[in-house]
Image (tube, rainbow, N blue to C red; front, top):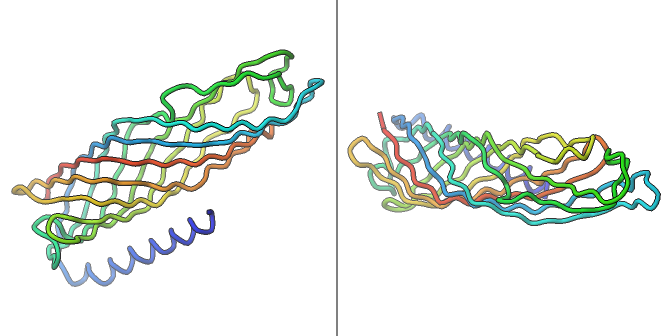
Amino acid sequence: KLKESIYMKKLLIVFLTSIVLTSSAAFAGSISVGTKVSNAFIDASGTETTTAGTVTGGAANTNSVEVDNMAIIPSIYVEYSLDSSVWGSDGNEVTFGVNYTYGEADVSDKISSRSEVAEDAAGSGSSGSVTYSANAEVENYMNYYVEMPLSGAAYVKLGFSQIDVITKEDQDHEGSYGDETLDGVNYGVGFKGMYGNYQWKIAYEATDWDELSLTSTTSNKITADLDVDELAVSVGYRF
């Protein structure tokens, strides 16, 4: 999956660059700024492998979980659109943009927890049953994209995304996993147009993120997959 992701990113960069070089020199364009509100559906699945520890009778454990959440996320965008479109209606031209989502969202709508025999190597320093809990949140979602008209108001979108994953494990562990920035490929389909100088969009988007792989300071390991689907409405002003 990692090799496939790297290949997709290189292909996307070549695709975006070729469009810029072949089209921006031939057509004048305009700049738009606006806001986007998405109903985001977050799905994640992960596996944690813990060490055996030093307590007598301790054993390595592998625990898997699937979680999901739904969140309303606002964002802002800046776009550059070519003035001419062969296939699209007014307001549906070849467009290059960047979108920043502010705030954060929990990956799960509830805290995941488990109980097991304490393991010194995990840093609990005790014996008996201990309950561990964890969650994660995502923030600083950046999206760089190109939108291509299909016909009329319909368009497709392809982009490159980055997002920060913030781990929120409990304090029973002396070790921590730290945080990570994930890359992803973003794609979507929707409708857009103009009302005077005002731009509108309605779209479905999905982002396929790289696999998250973290090792804690006590040698526990986590691998996780994250997917985000969005139903989005955007309103902007074109200068």
